[in-house]
Figure 1 (cartoon, rainbow, N blue to C red):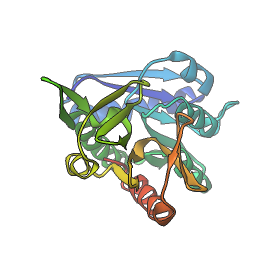
Figure 2: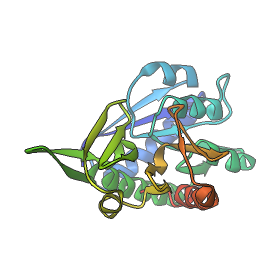
Figure 3: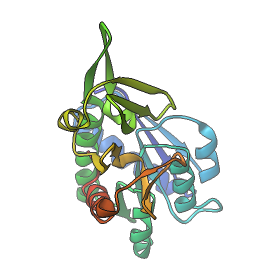
Length: 239
């Protein structure tokens, strides 16, 4: 696994140190040395950092923007970090689903619970980074990470892969064949579209709402299935 970048965002220095301590203890037990930890005293500082973190530990009760607002702003930017809320507020667990939180830890931190969460985090990062597919383009080929694909669109005999950086890759293929090559994060929301659930904000009036602000069609018959698939995917912590 490559270098793992962690961020801790908490306005209580004592709590930030506690999270860092739990993290250091876990990584030592797993004999992982390739990681970094950055600490931020508030949501604004985290948002202004511009660093692409793999995992963010985020307090909810902070000065504006609070943790939930910070998470929402990150998602609006297309940020796909694994968000782990660390808070005393049990009642905010349902709000956490709205910003696709990976997990929800209560203060004071329990070591066993923390280690269970981190076990899942490492599995998710391993899967997220490893899955790719090779596509044939003319006389050459190209490797595409599944995590980079926001949605796939079929027009005529071509497939168009819309990536998170705004670029589009087109090649000749059938949607049915593409479905067999991708994994469980992709959902067929329309006869001509596959969407990556990592980038879905919701579904409304026959359209899939994406975090980048885009909208793609959703079959009326598949809207309910999409909602159920998204909730199940979020509950299981993604791929």
